[in-house]
Amino acid sequence: MKVHVANHPLISHKLTHLRDKGTDSPTFRRLVEELVTLLAYEATRDVRTTEVTVETPVTQTTGLIMAQPRPVVVPILRAGLGMLEGMTKLLPTAEVGFLGMVRDETTLQASTYANRLPEDLAGRQCFVLDPMLATGGTLVAAFNFLIERGATEITAICILAAPEGIDVLEKAFTNSNIPITIVTGALDEKLNEHGYIVPGLGDAGDRLYGVV
Ligand code: URA
Image 1 (cartoon, rainbow, N blue to C red):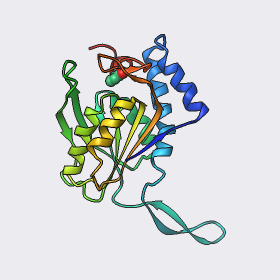
Image 2: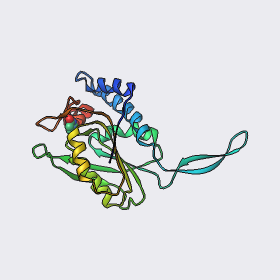
Image 3: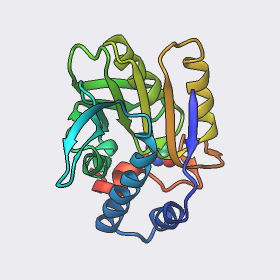
Image 4: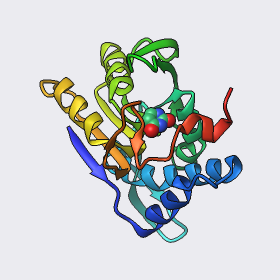
């Protein structure tokens, strides 16, 4: 498994405002969108391409376009939905599937409550959107779900990650022959006793959409 911590002053700047508890929901949503577009640029470095011929006004040449089948973008509901716009800005032709996962706040175990994904993901590159890689439970369940359907490459884009969650993923997929990559805006210090990332930014879903 590869872990890529984006190291860029613009990402740090936006993340600092995102962490600020005084940042309101509309600003938070805009910052998440902007951050995801920057992280998606890193995450799509190995997106598959195919060579084509193109006529410029001057001559004929060859270029690269994204290969078929197109990648599948999978936001994890609810908070991953706030990342979708930033991702599709960069990959407008990707297909979008949805995975609803909820974690039990006592046991911190993740379970699937909804999915809208192709039955067959054979040969597909999947980009999973989940803002907070905390215990790792949600992503382990989500990756297993995609692997069972045949996904051949999985990249998760997270705004923040905790070392504990990275360890859980490393252990869960150490023998997997599927390339797995985590792209995150920052690797924070730790998880607290409630499973929140420290220093973190609080509950990403609540900050995006309010407490419902
Ligand atoms: N989910 C969140 O929204 N925030 C955390 O800190 C951890 C999990």
